[in-house]
Length: 78
Image (cartoon, rainbow, N blue to C red; front, side, top):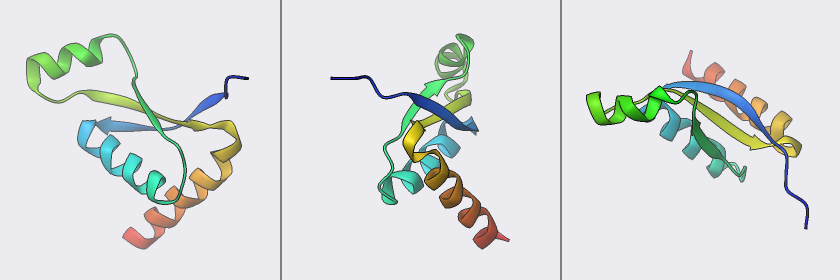
């Protein structure tokens, strides 16, 4: 079995934004992982309750689809 190559699709500003983006992509059938952008992000959860700079990753084969979903959501927002 081969390991899928995951790529960063966007960097969320905080946990809340990361969960919204994750839900949006998952509702479009796209697998999603969230990872802290740096080692201090986890400490921010402990100190302040919210983390900052969360990387949103998708399998490389879903990159274009994910970008389109995010682009459409941004256009609908305006």
